[in-house]
Length: 414
Image 1 (cartoon, helix red, strand yellow):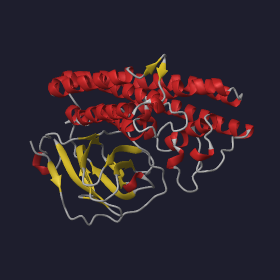
Image 2 (spheres, one colour):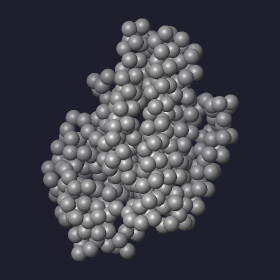
Image 3 (cartoon, rainbow, N blue to C red):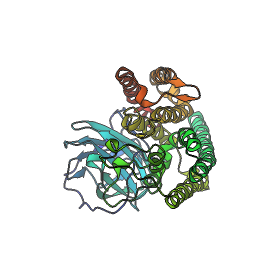
Image 4 (cartoon, one colour):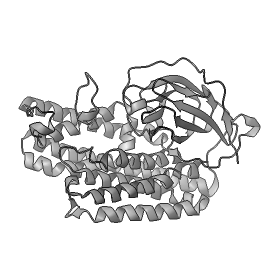
């Protein structure tokens, strides 16, 4: 079937850049990157039913969207990277802070789809060439089509169950993260570094399992999980990886040729308190009644794919935990979160695309087998203990799972 494609002139509304922090893997309201999936045609060509497709061209200095508005319902952004840097595309809330949905890691010459169920309102679109900075932005409007695209019957019951279970999972992980972070910072402030190092990776798995949810709160993620390599000029570094570096102090060669200066007792206390405050904030936001109202099938599908993107961009390359080398704990946690999200929607996928469900089952089993082979007691070997062949094997498995997982949201929603 065809979908409505809006392709007016690429001379769209004037772009504006607002000071806001963008993060990877957005979650709230809508959904995920996916490969093209047959979508029902919009009745009368106005998006009243079915889906609306818009084309996006991202370059080094432009983010051209083929229309500045679309009717509410299923919307597909076909994002093509016409530049020479890896890029990302975001749909942001009107305030420019909250990430509604995103598609990341779009290489030059590549097209990736962002599928979402859009509610009426004002938004911003944003391309982020080089995956740094505030992005190239424009206002975007979703008009009220009057369409009701909510599932019905048995499908609605399956989706409702998936949403209920996923919200409970998010709350459980934030509860464990809050308790574990308190134990970690207590050890760190007390200068019991051995205990803090032992706690670091096991506590962080609760963050990594729900990372797209945390990242959807655009202000929290950079304060809690920013890597030193991603710091922008003038940006203060706080969060987990600052404390990681202090616990696994690098030598001068690994620190830009400069001797590492350990944090003072006062700095330890201040940064630990900041991490604890931000973790409490994440807990409070995910336990607010309004949070559950923003989760739907598209959100869950986006979360699954976003977690695999996290593996591909950091964990499988060893860039996430560059000081502690505990990347495989994060890798496993991201896979855990993606599997929970998929399992919640599996009955829906089976009913609509049995072949896709079979492929996802097999690919999850394959990647888990590779991770199991690297287990060491209750944890994993360090990333630096992996051979080049083992890294390549893991990377291949991530790619093999990522392709069908990118089809999950479209299979469930459209």
